[in-house]
Amino acid sequence: MEKHVPLDLINDILSRLPVKSLLRFKCVSRGWCFLINDQNFIKLHLKRSTQSNSHSSLVIVQYTKLSLVDLSSLLVVEEVADDSLRQLFRGSIKVLGICNGLLCLSNSAYNRNILWNMSTREHLTLPPVPENFLLYPTPETMKLFGLGYDPIDDDYKVIFVSQTYQSKHKGIFYSLRSKSWGKIHDYSNWIYCGSGSGVYASGALHWLVSRSWKEMMENSDVFIVAINLNTRKQQFFRCPDQDPDQDQHQDQEYKAWNIPPHRFDFKTIEVLGEQLCAMDLNGNHNFTADIWLMKKYGVQESWTRLFSIPYFHTGYISSYAGLFVHPLTCSKNCDEVLVDVGHDHARLIFYYNPKNKSVRYVNIPTCQNSSFEVQICHENLVSLTSRERP
Amino acid sequence: MAFTWSKTIYMGLDPIFLTELSISIIIFSTIASSKKSRVSKIKTADNEIFEVEEAVATMSNTIKIMAGDCSGGVIPLNNVHSTIFARVIEWCKKHVDDGEDLEYYKGALKNCDATFFEVDQAVLYHLLTTANSLDIKPLLHQGCQRFVDMINGKTVEEIRQLLHIKNDFTNEEEDETRKKLWSSVVGMNSFILL
Image (cartoon, each protein chain N blue to C red):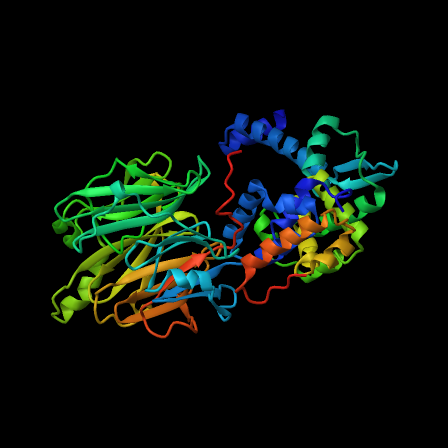
């Protein structure tokens, strides 16, 4: 075959195959083995996989259980029963970060950390943090963490930042390429909003923060801090600007009934596709979740409102504790978006069609109650061990 | 012109404007009519000449560029045989109005195209390499997709037979590769090793 078909065509064809076939085809011949292991091929395959969503999965973490659900069918559930993985997690499993199909998993004490490729099942235990880098272990410590890809050094990095309420802080990162821990110096004392898990997009990890507790509770000055994975320096973005008149329309209805406005407004950030995405939950008794996308990374003006999901699709919200809206993935033209919505007591996952405002509920077999974490994971061949410098 | 001048002055319209307008209309319609009938002449490697409508022929970026250089003459394609070229043109004729957007071609092959690609391997190879050299992205995309459907899910031995690939591993190397593969897929459902 190689005689007839040029190499770049073979690359093109093979990059469309699912990982299971490619792993097997490494045994076909030396040429194919070399090709499939090549870093450039792996990047091409990842790019296709991310853009087409053809073999993506939902990763569901529920206490000690890790399950994979095929995105196209949403029926096939595979519980990861890898013994070596289970041994490492005797307590509950936490997802520290997800990037390019790699997951960083940790136990509840954050002292056992594993990088895991859900497609090839390759995993790598990170070495323990060196003594002088140890993070503050007190219960008052807030922690930020995340996994990201540095495109300049072609390296995956895990970041940990901890800080006490007395405003002492420490930041460290692990580089897969250099297999070592290092310090992060450019960091300030932020109050972060949310679970502490950083959102990876465009070579940086992002957290939603504010300068003080007061500002965070009032949602008056919340913004995004980005730590660049190559330089480890901070950058700041403002959240998308809202329509100031929006809330007024909702107020009208309740004025008629003499119901006092109970205004709330808070934000979360996620990644949708490869772009940074901000969710704005605002309103009074009925709220909408606005989903914004930063179309051009770093450009404030490029925040574009994709759509608003009205409250009645999110179920009756009896409490705002732990409320979140997490868009997981959307089709090419954003015809449909898969959304994970919930709060501490209820959870809904559905496909939302913004054109006809219809909803298609999804029932995922493993998720019985509301305490689970869902992430989308793209198929990939990224190798955790062989990262030789070109 | 003198005749029209008097008429336009009478109607109160600016005669110079109308003259310019009528000249542009004449020029434009000449261009438009010549575009309709423009045909590209293409000569394949076995010296056969094809006359193809320009819109169809320029679906190939390579031909588009070469047409610019040849300006009306015969475009020579030294690497393409007439039988394959005929098939390619047949595909292009069917898809000339589909637009530039590659999104249309993404996903599984549609039925009308599936039959086009039900050919034997040698022909499929030639279609692919021709689509590549002529830079017809949608055709290339569909051809690759057909190829993927052909090889996906097959065992290693089936692939070798299908594509006439020689197993150039030594016994030790092959064992090593299989062992590495096996250890990584333990726990994965429905994985056929072979």
